[in-house]
Length: 256
Image (cartoon, rainbow, N blue to C red):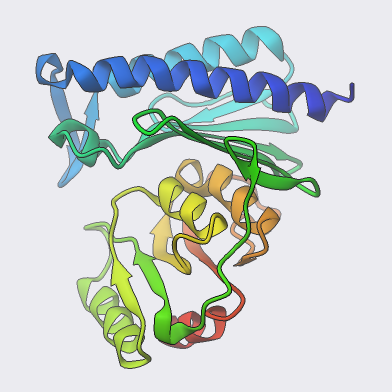
């Protein structure tokens, strides 16, 4: 078994185990102390504990690898980097809205190679390996074949972005006949693009831990994806664009 295959197997198991812990916290969410890191930017003990469990497990298995987590930053300097969002969609999580997931991606020399997005409420594991396809609970995924006039595109937004730009993109998509939504979880959105449930996802400025895993899924399922990392690594925020082949031109026109 090559090193990447071993990381795929161990990453899959670790992500699932972390998701079950997160699901238990979700069931007991009214007991959690919720803090804010900024306007509409929530964090709870569940986020920190799930990330701690993932980091401890993965670093015990792969001590030479580095880890980048949303809550605790980067640890190590290895060329293989695990990029972790312990609960993507925390705002939904703390409100009791079941649109959140555990997201774990793997970069090798700043190229996304493995991705795991686990929705423990629905028990859906989205997993992909660069060059080997992407699956949902073992079933192969393919991006949608829809055109823009039957498309639904998920739009991401944060308060550090310009609301006018978000509104302009939304208006341009609607003018082309598309529908839009906003889930509050980029990782779930990208997994749904990979599985043909959505035709696209865009957010103008987002962090690597939100999208690393989902980008692997989308690429491997046949979606068109912009190069988020550009060889520069996971430290910087960037624009994220992913769409089904029949919709990418319309999405690019809307965000131009």
